[in-house]
Image (cartoon, one colour):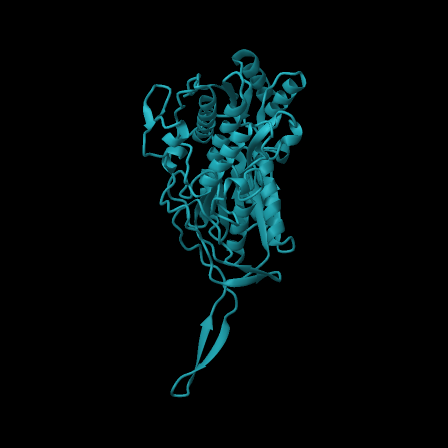
Length: 456
């Protein structure tokens, strides 16, 4: 998520969402049997290639007898399993309860699943982009062989480090495997856990409960990731509200130009309620500040609603919390742990959505929907019973359909059969079309229901 405003470039060499990596060997790591150690990687997964040369496990010997009765020795190599040391570079503090807190939860999840006796992970938090190179160097000097950097602004520095340290492995979060310059080495990969589908579902909840017909969004920076999340949220809100009332939703966006700024987020949220008449607030800011504002209004008798963001924030708004978007980076990190530990590295580009890294990959009947339960890398927070039952069913239906891409928010189906237009009235998505990865990754326009122009 953590990106600075930059030129728009898409991912390269994409293959099918349903294709995934898998290893044919079964190996033991610290006594734990690991089969298909990279299985389950779905989403957008770009072309792979061999990593720098590594030392393989000792060869086993198989003796066979030929017709001439001469004995021939055939060597078979297997992936080596060894203890890992992994280093993380965090852009914010682990106590933000948002982006960095989510990555740290993912780190601890991956460590536990891999085996605490088999991995040591360390991190450096609150690292400015200009200091990322020094943080990476420090982690390498401490013996880390896998480095994971968690800000878009770290991308070029990560690619440079991968070039400088060819015997180490690097994963960059929220950028692209090729690096901005397009020449990142093969010991670098990229990954992202994507929320736009969940934001659409949040929008359905918002449109189902709003009484004013006006929703608000507190945005961090006007970058493509945040813009597509806002657009998805507003499309979902309009879908539900227009179904209910026959009227279009109104949406307001307040930009704070900070990732972690609870006081700014609080002030923006209050202004959206008091000045714009918003009664449902979504946000991209890494604290529960906006949800806390909604809860304060609830206690005063004014119904204002909000969501979780990256972590389950229900405790900060037990009345005001509708649902929300939650990430578990752990399964992604665990795959990279396994690749390095078994000398089976492949340079990949992972972009996960609803349905990825789930034990059951296909849609379920609505009555058995897992919406609101932890699963995969991205999932919904529990649904507040205040959401009318018919809209809870709609949310669950769409959640299940998204697992197989049977439904996508950025389509006319997600906009009540109407083409999706921007604020200038230009049709961006017409009948029979869906936003592809490049449109989503480079989104630089607002949907027509948003009042404020997108800052340039």
